[in-house]
Length: 114
Image (tube, rainbow, N blue to C red):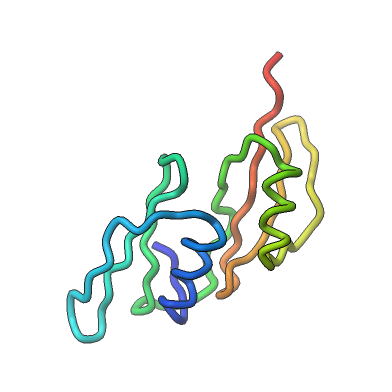
């Protein structure tokens, strides 16, 4: 569950910028909207919640990509706030960024097989 301040703003970021699809969008109580999303290609589902504590408290949610340069360029052009340059390590390449609420996500390109 990703804690956000404004579900509509967060939905715009995760759906329109990152390419997540909406699995469920239901008002389950007057003060509680269930907003359930899936990452492109599957493998990750998350809920965007504005009824829990501490927006922006998520750190290091990894999103695997095939091409770091291409994905980073597309996201940067869409206004994504990368917090550090790409980090090349023996474990792959990493490029951290934040969502509009300050939650940290990290693009990860696995190392080449070999």
